Amino acid sequence: MRVIVLIKADQDSEAGVMPSEQLLTEMGQYNEELVKAGVMLAGEGLHPSSKGKRVRFSGGKKNVIDGPFTETKELIAGFWLWQVRSMDEAVEWVKRMPYPVNSPETEIEIRPVFEMDDFGSEFTPELREQEARLRAQVEGSAKRS
Image 1 (cartoon, rainbow, N blue to C red):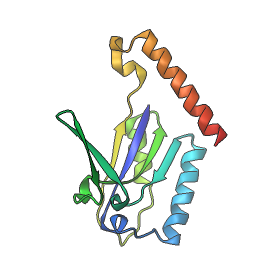
Image 2 (tube, rainbow, N blue to C red):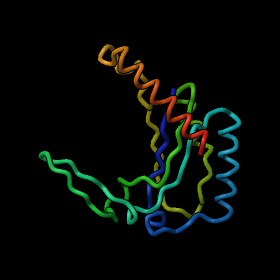
Image 3 (tube, rainbow, N blue to C red):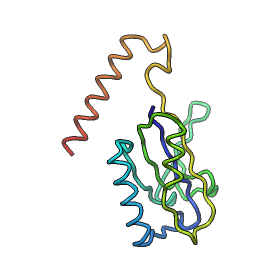
Image 4 (cartoon, rainbow, N blue to C red):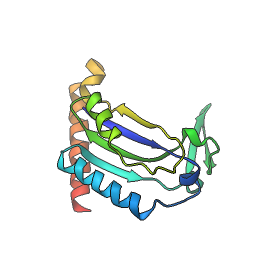
């Protein structure tokens, strides 16, 4: 199963405070473990919401909202995409994640990623073929980068 691991933003990440060299080193080692175990598919940190935008869809209209966004607890500071055998395995990997001792309390969210079979009969053979073709194109583009 694939899961996305969401790292919630905090006051420091929203203020653009960069991690220490020690934390970057520990995270690099952790990411190496994830890669060697065949778990990590992708992972990135995100700039503060002050550099972002939201597009709100309402009543047929689309409104662009500039960051920063006020509710820090609802913001994401980074993510990983993992391939694991179970949610329990994902939890065990998250428990091993390095985290700076002096940082404020945070939560890490783990959510399963939909797979084609999750959509049932509504996901027709034609839609499955389209999805497979698009995934192959995306993977090919990523290899050329």
